[in-house]
Image 1 (tube, rainbow, N blue to C red):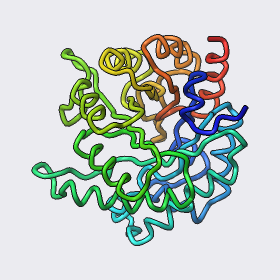
Image 2 (image 1 turned 120 degrees about the horizontal axis):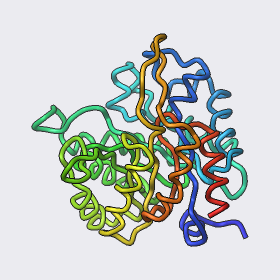
Image 3 (image 1 turned 180 degrees about the horizontal axis):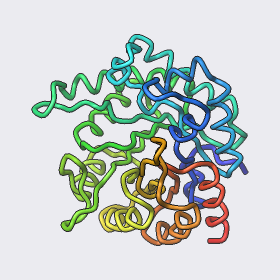
Image 4 (image 1 turned 180 degrees about the vertical axis):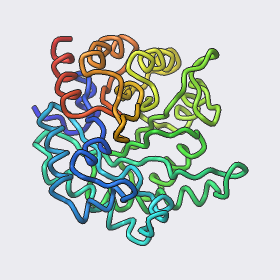
Length: 295
């Protein structure tokens, strides 16, 4: 029987998300300095090809090309007035290639700006920007939202409130942590414990970590989160550390074999959802799907 919601699938088995979007866009010719989300309008076939390749690799859900499509971030490209249009297109493109029983994730990343006193923005301004973005994605439609790669807990909470002000769809949150001698902390100094407590209080149904950390370190981070919550946990590690080649091309240090080798460790640590972040591609997801079947 086909699962009606992502929660129905979570009750049955480990769920598999997709991998990186930016890496795949660059493979298809996205130039440096061009807004990735603008390609939802100018290169729709490229986006559908990326989504299709992840579904074919075994992903249960794929993320819309909307990571940087908040009105605040789009303003740096002069596209803030097209926020709704770009997000609507992002959701529709993923939905057009979605097989039966699969899901579309409304992807929302950080604004790239800072809240007061470090920056110029208020939490209310962030909430409003995320609300406009969420309206476009929800109209697509998407099945649920994923706020990801957040390094400031206050911004993540602003995103949750903003989305909830315009949509009743589930909202998942994934933070990005650095490993320190004292444990795992975000760039803004938010500990795992502080983040988990805040999301528990706000009733966020699924939480997790993505980006920055490679698979082995992220497994330890997820293990720390599991000690503090019974909620389903998301784990989407990077494919190692990014490195510049002689031709200014960014490559990642972890091979697909090493990445997949840590899938059992991620599961043992408490992850209920596995996926990939920077540097991963459909081959990483295909190999992860095979590893999950063996487990």
